[in-house]
Length: 121
Image 1 (spheres, helix red, strand yellow):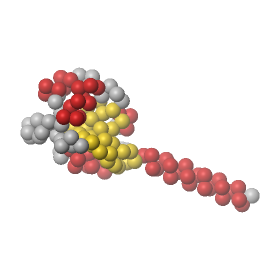
Image 2 (spheres, helix red, strand yellow; image 1 turned 180 degrees about the vertical axis):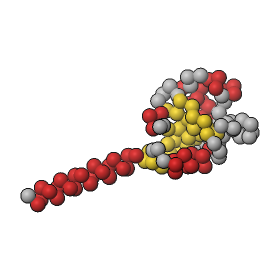
Image 3 (cartoon, helix red, strand yellow; image 1 turned 120 degrees about the vertical axis):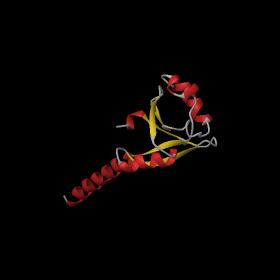
Image 4 (cartoon, helix red, strand yellow; image 1 turned 45 degrees about the vertical axis):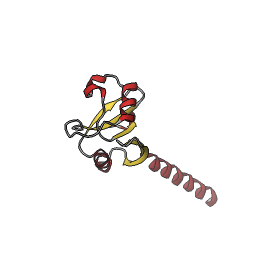
């Protein structure tokens, strides 16, 4: 009986660890140098996550949902701050945007963080 209880406790711990691990999601980070990397932006629904995104894009953000189930976090003042055009993110935006008119001439300025839209709460 004790062995069955230990196995059950181990299974519960594995489920808990798996659930916790999967709350921390990786995101794509498009920098203005043309590099695309995976970054850990923290646990879904936390202040830490918002702060990490603000740090990566160097300011407050605007969220742009895309047709492919992804969303971009972009600098909400990138053009006015004369941030460089992010060519790789712009290509993704132009391919998957619902409405290209939401960005000046369909261009994305500054660094971008891309996440699954379902992760945005």
